[in-house]
Length: 279
Image 1 (cartoon, helix red, strand yellow):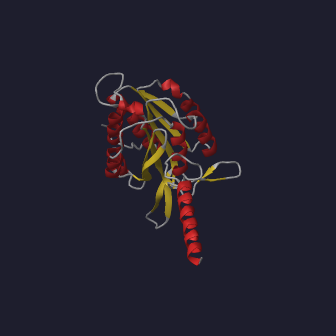
Image 2 (cartoon, rainbow, N blue to C red):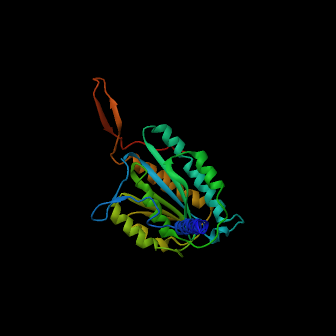
Image 3 (cartoon, rainbow, N blue to C red):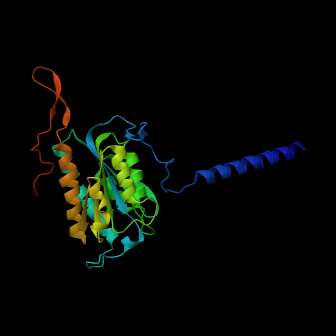
């Protein structure tokens, strides 16, 4: 009798473990309860979960939907996902030059991909070209739907744990949203809850940029690209020409330095500073 009771108890425990594991799940789909949440005030505004300082954090959101397997309508045989991955790596490599010129300025970069789900491939942390290259190289081939809004939502929450005052979403997509929350709704929500602290930049790759007119409404920017050179140029305009340039040209201060009298203080970043030497 005692043995039967022990066996019955063991079965119950095993079933409980299985049920718990299944309830937790392994899907990477965005879930408000599973993603790192930014603290919010009573009025719903985002609040950082860590102390923030001088610097910029950028979440790269890359479309991984099935249409990215196609070549651009402009011609050629190279699929759009390969063009996009190469362009992102080339443009972000400029970060090394920027950091050399501004060693006190922290630049964080994270990589997210989205199809019907959203996956963080590289956490938002200090830029390392080798880590970004490896993350891009290890991505699977695209498939599935397009969850732009969900990706924006997930990455924004993570930006508030990155430790910098300036926060950016840089989206590369070739299609309209087909899964999850609508990006225009999410964009307006982010603008409101962040009080404009999170800026949205987008490249419409092989698709009419007019589809994303809401980006301008939230004081962001959307550019069009129809091929590889166009994509690199648009990314360069947004990353080097906007994100890095405005980050050091906004009247912020760089870390305190000791003057000849031995006192410490901060000094403004000159408006004439160029983030990257002319090419």
